[in-house]
Image (spheres, rainbow, N blue to C red):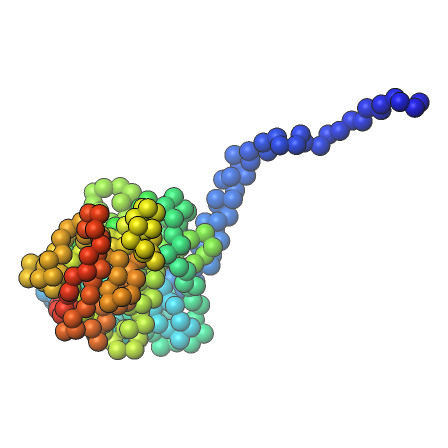
Length: 344
């Protein structure tokens, strides 16, 4: 009848209502699928590396009949057999043997290694090999899922999972080297994991696993893949890295928005000076712990990777302007980089 309302059974959700959270089994299923996808994507490119040293030349391992043997991990990043790993895995090795995921064993050649970043490139003679896709370590966020793949204690292609615990760490190795801009994770690593990939949920390598702190649990570290790509490029071209050196250790630091606006900066982060080497170019330039580097020679510095890219061989002995933030002031100091000392 006219003027009467008809009630309809409306089962649609109320507008603006909060959707029901996903069920617990759905969350864990998604987590499992992410780990499985990462492992299936990268595992074919992960290799086991065994090295032999003359007695007295090795850094790690067990001595046997005048030699010292050790092992580690690596991953293939080109189909013609170039493999990325840690410098401490292969440095000083007289013989390097690689076992691929499908069980093939091959002798490998050391292309070059860089102890300053604990990275190395070796090559096996083969073609059409599975490769690990490389990601972007600048996009890493604290708390994101990561998967570590390696060969701990010789157990091939072992997969562990965790999260990114922190970014911008500095790590001093047992040999005294200081590695900057390191990714901290709680994905379990053990002896033999060194040189293996740290992978995101999309199946991209975002770091090279390098160290753990013993006997602590859940304190594991990886070198960002952007640094690794830069180093590998130089090693493939020259077999070694000649870089300028200013003699400081630093870590990435986010800048407050009001600071960037006040000083008219084009970057939202910089490199905080943590320590200085006595007598180094940085010490002679009167840099101080706590200074934040935001530019070198007029080029913006947003992080350690930017600084490393600019400290190239052609800047050795050249007077450069280093822009820093010290307290509330923006200053320019003159610095003359030296050639980085070779490390044995």
